[in-house]
Image (tube, rainbow, N blue to C red):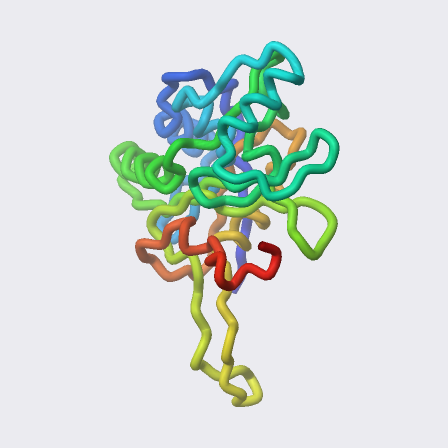
Length: 232
């Protein structure tokens, strides 16, 4: 199996009320990318949130910190100005997902209100525009408890399974797997970021050639229950 990752170029700056699906369809067509059956579209939440109007004005650092507190359901850790919080979606992330990077001066971008719904609406609109049903993954950048560095992960999913559960199957040596669940949409998100990057102003990519089970996966399925969370 050969997998290829294609950046979607030519998208303008997204503003509240923009038809993001139409803009993506135009950019995909202009780049000669199709889309094709079997593709997966990966979109950073920044452009989704901007199109949906999930942008707030922040006059200064104090106001920014107040917005973070408002977006947090629980604050789990603090270190200086850094806050690790649980959002209303159930995500545990820095500053409750309130981000000033790649935002206009004096503003901050919030997480989409319902990222899975955002992914689903993008998928439906692209189907109408292109005639191809392309699964959609909406991403954000998260840290990880055990490792340094950041990776993109899925916060919204439509059209594919979020997790591939291998428990009960056997490995190459015939051993029965007891705990192996593959967060396939997180792997997709991280792979797509290789061609998007944090400073490249490329907010979307198509992944082609990847065999992923179609289904009704949600980002909520990736959230570890509190009873299994050793960090709480």
